[in-house]
Length: 124
Image (cartoon, rainbow, N blue to C red):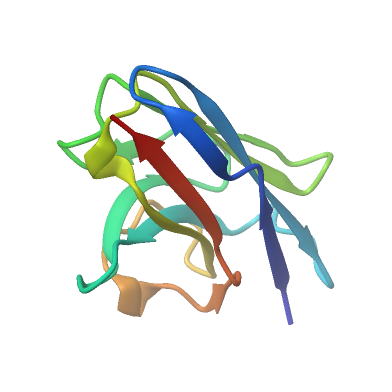
């Protein structure tokens, strides 16, 4: 069993930056693919970015490509999401997720474990 805890969310002005962290416990995530998803009020949860177990492969949603950067530190059992040039439309609860396959995946159904989420609010 893997427990995931997100942190680093908050309120930021448009154009600002935030860095989210996803700390895993219960089991090492060294072999897991990791992803970030987000859910805005009244909308479905959507894919943001994914990273393979080694960090050698990443895949970004078009809406965040060039602004967000995913990384992982397997020694710390932690995944990060650096968010720059934030826009009001980035406002959402951000969720971290882990998949046993170890690869990048964009589908929610591909992920086996989820965190509780952290709120990100971008003001205009």
